[in-house]
Length: 331
Image (cartoon, rainbow, N blue to C red):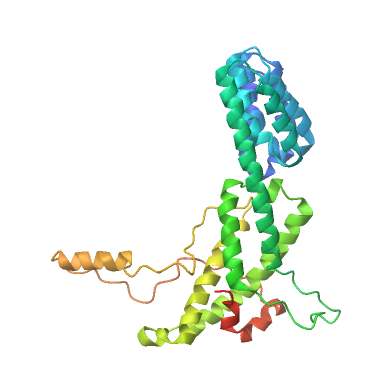
């Protein structure tokens, strides 16, 4: 059976492996064997087993059984630690089993343990509801993120026309998915099979191609326009369209991370724009305080966001004549 030092060493191997953690099955097995050790080893195992559980689906049964052994340990501190971590095992097909186990543990006479079990059950029910909503939202998002058209033998599109990209709907759905995904960050990796995730990334990549073409067209159309020129109906639509496409671009780049990230924030296109910018406010303060205003740097500022520039291709050629109003339908 492993010692405390061996448990920490193998924990370090798994923690440092990042995306390749699943390749270190032997290290995880050492941690599972920690349940056979003494009090210190068991306490560490109770924490380490659930932390890496999702990366080793082939060891799922062994991991759950190991954690259950700790839930029945004679040491009350070990039991409480093991029970507290049980919700981390409640993923996919394991959820009913873990819920059943927790229900049985409600029979404990220890009031502190009872509260832990009750809280764990509530956590699982919330996760199940969140996962259900996230799956429905994901399926709806796929409806507005088409697959690339099939290519004929001559390299042209097999179909008559390419699918239209409905940016307004996608901004709303993608933002909602991004927000809920923060609460269940393993959804795209642990809750979906590999084939479905591959399909989603193909859709994201195709959508990103059309997005880049459209963003460039909008920036070119708005370049140099200020004041009254931006107040025409056509340019107002273009300004909103640029906000929409920039937002989608940021969210898609987050989802392309390995694993998917949910850290970026965007201001939705339909949210009102603040009239006074921070830079303007500071400039006004500097002026009113009696000190000379700071000189602005020469030349236009670069966009803070670095836009991903995908390979050009025929997939998005239809966007060159895209109708701006059509992209904002439903607004």
